[in-house]
Image: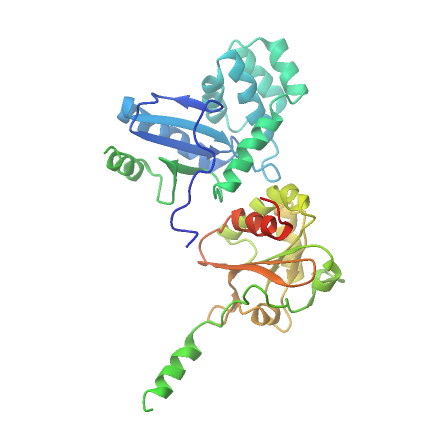
Length: 178
Length: 171
């Protein structure tokens, strides 16, 4: 049935933001929304999992903003993408999750300054929505892969339907090492 | 023959089955808002997606309808109309729709309760609510795809998009 094995339809590749080595035995993909409280809860758990598993884990984050209920999610996603060409995607990703309660445009600009981004370039990318299309591509790849809420995780290309508390997630990821 | 009655009984206990593809979609008229109603037949000429769901404000369907709300532009590409249906009353729908900022109609299968869900074979008598069921109906009013999800599982949008693609002959 459709609920059993749901596959990631867009494989991890060049376009992705990746932490970890390509040789890592386990790849974890998250579809997330910066304004989603559940994703906020998942953020430190993923960090801890990365710490515990080290080189054995590769982590990818893709955007899945639920814009109608999270009014700042789209711009927050674009802010992280705008930081990417300046090599600060992950810094922005982390900063946004650590400041989930303040994601309006003024704060996004402040965070960009704080992270030392070229603010003229950043503002240009934000006002021209240079990365809106990319965010939508992420979103649609999620829809086509059976993302049904945020966060949704994929382990080695298969949707993970279990609990993502630290203990369970670690155990599951470790079980995929071979 | 002595077994027959118990077999028959078992049949009775089972849920009626959801209408299958290539069946004509039963028409209905239901309230969308206080004083306003919507009929399936008014969408003839374009594909229609019926999303039956158990209840307003239950956590999973919040996610499900919220997700569909985000995917609407993709449904639009097929000129398809999405309609949500549950047994909740119009005032509940109004509050739910406002809360989730839904941009498609949700209809009240309220009186007689669950009649439309029954006609589509997706009424859960024991719970008094609809299954989490999806129907994709083509422009001529024929069901082309149906799916009943486990009640607690958000079925996502992928199945709907695949069905719309297959109807339109793309991909």
